[in-house]
Amino acid sequence: MLEQVGDRLWLAEGPIVDFYSFPYPTRMVIARLGNNDLWVWSPVKLDAALKGKADALGRTAHLVSPNKIHHLYLPEWHAAYPEAKLWGPASTIARFPALPFEPPLEDSVPAAWQPDIDQAWFRGSIMMDEVVFFHRPSQTAILADLIEAFSADFLKTHWSWWQRPLAALDGITLSKPGPPREWRLSFTTRAPARAAREKVLGWPAERVVMAHGEWQRADGHAFLQRAFAWLGR
Image (cartoon, rainbow, N blue to C red):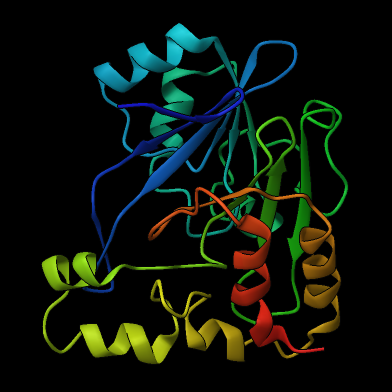
């Protein structure tokens, strides 16, 4: 259920979910901070086995939604860990007015995880913003939808014949990774996103973990450069 992918960093694969009739895999990340608290990013469906594995790692202290569509299982994790702090950008918080979120995530890194995790806020789109993270101990960049990289095997197995060509057109395949084309086009103001990209490219990323598609175990910096080329100069 949990795979250790670096120093104090684990990931778990969740179920495939329906996203406007397109099958999408889900993936979460757990980082153990220097104080042994757990930082849980984009939680997947919680069951007894996953909860037991997480509890064995430490105290779940932070539940993090990176953008407004990565919240599907956030309420059930909050119910299981009511003392954990909830985090997300303002766009996520607006969807859950009854939940006790911390102040919105932006460019500034919360003191709770600043020694271990950096972040960059991609904004300027009329569609959606996203906070991207970098786990320093494992040199891992962590992204939700800003980079999708579906393999040919996954598409052949889970997407229908008419859906597969759309993945290539959208630029979300392993050979041409990135955000869906409609999201790229929605960045009507690109300067903030380009500034965030420069921050990301300044990280010494060895690995890149994304929520959707094949995550990168090596050469992370080169992968990020290629995946963010669409932003231009």
